[in-house]
Each structure stands twice: as structure tokens, then as C-alpha cells.
Image 1 (spheres, chains in turn purple, red):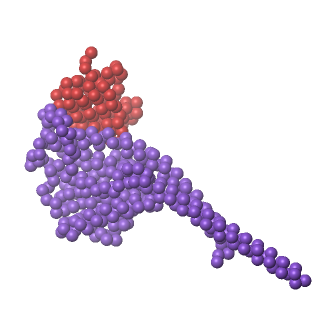
Image 2: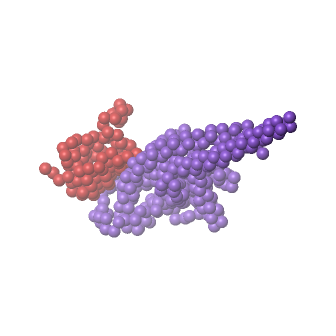
Image 3: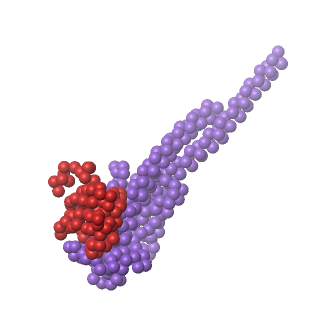
Length: 294
Length: 97
């Protein structure tokens, strides 16, 4: 049985830990609000982008034979690139591992089907998990450790790397793994194919006139510009969703930790009091016994 | 008074304007365009420059944009800029462009 002094020390250390988890929870809550606002502010852009994408797809009318490879695909699905976006830091519950797990399952599935797979990790934590199994097919990780708030330029960095590889013919299909923010307690790990893009569904008869677009300078040049930036926007959106999810996951993980610490303190305090009482009783008995002996 | 149309300027970071405008000047890659209501549907890429909008309430707003597209239909104008700031927040470097 632990001595009174040991118990006192343990209570003190659990209390210190509780203070830290409590502070982390509050920091995460503040960051979550900011991340959520950033994600919401970016939503109109990607929605409009989807709209334009739908217009272009409608204008092509399903005839993708003449379309750039970035829209129609290379016609093969032998080589895959998995972009796994996770956080740079841990202590956020199952956030990193659930994204990594989704990526790992997909990689295994593709490899079992005889496809070539490459993995690009954005964020250190996912790479740590995947490295043990896929070390030889992993590309150097993209590190956002220094980045406080994800900006469009960060997404451009990632997308540039992806585009360079695509242009070099390194892969045919790219899939992006990230966690979609639903609420503080629910983040959904998601896989989204970004190259070739899944074409958003056109609302029935949105405006059929839009298929008579004029293009300036011309259609091909616009598409050559538009498609890469669509990839960037998708990545940007995923990164923002991820940032919000990470903070949400951390907040609920730290909330749990704080509550657990509280329960532990209660239990330890009870043991401490009981032992102290037992000691006092023993001392009293000794004194009484001593007095009676006289 | 000319008819208004729906004008939106969005950058990846936020929605800068959404409202009715009378006329908007857009720096298309082939030259500036004045867009009014009932413009033919056009899709153009942008060069760095100023977007100047005269809103339906008479207010004039200008923005610096760099990169992106303008999507024009008879009833809407959507400027998807890769980078956009209001005129007040421009830096000298942007003015040079």
C-alpha cells in the first residue's frame, strides 16, 4: 500500500496534468472557432468553383475525348497517388490515426489489385503511422509545422508538387485523404478523388444557356489554367476542413482527459483520507494501550 | 437607370462582395471588359489588375485581383480571384503591377 506521502505526491501530479489538459482544451476551443471561420469563409469559393466546373462539364457534354488529361484522366488507372493529410501534432484523440487507417486500407487494397501506389503525406503524424508499412513508396512529407494558419499559398505548394508529378506521368489517379468537420464530436475521415476530378452533379436545367459559353482567350487555355487551380482549391478546402477537425478532435480528447483526471483525483483523495484516518486510529489505540499499561 | 445584375467577388480566403451591381470593369487577359446586365456568357481568365464595380446603390468599390477567372452569364458575374484585396489594403508592390 502506498504511503501517505506517495499518495499526496500522486494527487499533486494528477492535478498538474489536469491543469495542462484543461488549458489545451481551452486553447483548442479558441483555435477551433478560428479554423471553423476560415473553413466557412473558403466555402463560397469552392462552391463557385464547383459551379464553373459543372458548367464546363455540361459544355463538354460527356464527350471527354478531346478534353485535357487533367479532366478526363489518362485512360489508365495503374498508378495511384494517395495524398494523406493529417495534423502536425498529436494529442487529438483518434484524428490522425483514423485518417491514416483509411489511407492504409486504400493502399493495401490497391496493391492487392496489382496497382502501383505512391503516398504523399501532408503533416508529420500520418507519415509516422504509415512509415512502418509503406516506407519504400512514401514521398518526402510536406511539413506545415511552422504554419499557424493554413493559407492558399500552402495549398498551392502541395498542389504544385502533385501537378508536377502528374505532368511527369508519375500517376494516373490521385486521391486525397482528410477529415471532414461535422461537429466537435464527429469528424469523418474522407477519401476524395481529385485527379481526374469527380464532376459535381449539374442541377437539372441550371441554365442550359451556359453551354454556349464564349471563352477568352480560348477554351483550351482556360481549361489549362482552370483545372490545376481546381486541384489547388480542393486541397485547400481539405486542409481547412482538416484544421477544424483537428482542433475539434483535440478539444473533445482533452475534455475527456480533464474529466478522467478529475475522477482519478477523487479516487486518490478518498484513499488518502481513509489511510490518514486509519493512521490516526492506530496512533490512538497505541496511546490508550500505553496508558492502560501504566 | 441600367438593370442590375448579381456580382460576386470571391477569393479562396473569403467572399469579398456579393450584391447587385450596375457595371463592373474586369481585367480580362485579353483586355478590360465592362460587364453590364445581359452580357453574353463568357468565361475569361484574369490578368493582375483592378476590378471596379458600380453597385446598384450607387456605391463604387474597387479591388485588386491577381490570377483567377471571371464567369459571366446574362444575370450574374462571378469573379474567382486567386488573390484579392480591397483598394484600401493595396501595397505599393501591387500598384506597380
